[in-house]
Length: 208
Length: 199
Image (cartoon, rainbow over all chains, first blue to last red; front, side, top):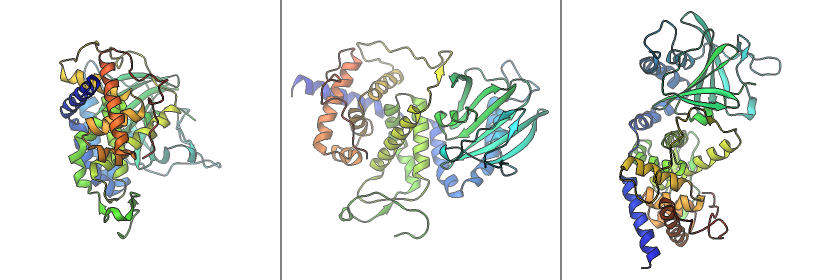
């Protein structure tokens, strides 16, 4: 064996040793364990059946704004609303495009060319604030997009902060839950989804 | 052929044996190794979690039928294809820019293996993720996931001899990177950075 062979073999052993010590996180185990049931159940049922659990988890994690409990709704409250099942089909204009907006802030609709397709809307009152939500589907994934009127919702400490297409956004992760939030037109935009990558959720940040 | 639903069949010769269904209940058995592979492909744990979840979601979207290929090799191939698709999609988007350094991890010190296991894995997988695709994929298949050379060749669509050669060179590149040495196979070398065949 040459010196290079020895070195390559040692590296191989080391990679295997290090790799063997890596375990998938618990959140991934829970998410993968639940996947077969949700996939068999179809698109609507996991949103409805999982919505209550998601809401509980989100409220437990995000209900307390930095500095203590606040009377205003939390980011978790908004995300839970965004993930609720839609109440009606999305309204569309003569050109077939989505016509839903909140305080002048329009929900995106990229049509057939993009991944996310609006499938329904709902309106709620969250802490006394009008909250309009649109549910989006893409290749079997579901994302909820809520626009909350009023003052900014507090963002938990430790949230990842990015600038995407010139828009400052905050990202919160918990297990397979992803929540992206930003301000637009004096309103708080919140996008939430389970088991969906941040890259795909950021597609909903741009407005069209 | 099974009745009802859409059937995804792996395109292998009929002589490779009867069809068998990929059992969704068995996917959890491979989760650790797929997560390791995803981390080594992406270079970041958070991206690895996303990649594994999306791979499982796609695989479970409809029944999967395999012939000769074993579950893990099939899942690795699905993971790699998902990674390539996401990388292409991401290349078409503007990149998000971190604005408060939360994810600006300082580079690990060079010259010695970091004794802390978590940091070692992070540094090692970042180095592997930065390899040219052909080298990275072989290293992930054999050293990270634990496939045999033959299984890796079938999963990646290359000959076993090619796996052997690429693996050797990939390991040398990883060793050089971890010790702060020049790349033993610079980009100008025709043996470096060969594009893998699509699996």
